[in-house]
Length: 238
Image (tube, rainbow, N blue to C red; front, side, top):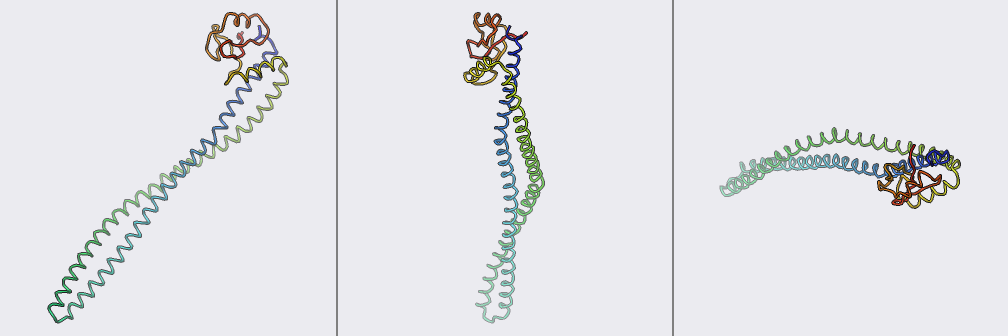
């Protein structure tokens, strides 16, 4: 039986190493995408912190502007009141009285706006503080995760390089005819495994039943036999 053939066992070892390398290659190829995802998350979190800080600065600037306007209005109102004390004509006094009343109304509106702005500043301070603490901590966790992935890339590259050497050694040890058949199978079959044991007369690679001729060939003939459904090399395990 083929599974008892020492040369076929060498081919099984090569196949096992090939499959491990394919898994590692796939994982390595996927890691840059994962790193890009983390960098996108970091960018979003950093932008959230910056947005919170920017909003706070805008509100503080607005409050300073309102404060200056209130001070200017208050000083102007005081000046108009002093001026009112100096006028002698009733019409001039009344005109100043109306102007002062209008200025006081503007001042009241400015003070209301400042109170509203100060309340927003309190809220923005809370959000900014939250962003600086919790989000900043999350960013650090993401950076650590990114660092781990870069280390994983280096580790995989080292393991793949070592495995490639083992694969080359295995290829040298496998019988030329078996190796040729195996390489042809790898070109036909789209995904591993390329060699699959039969279980209850079914190919474990495609899970389909093979013909009686294939089953008999696997049992009797000492040569590579292929699944007549998927093309994989099949054998009976003993």
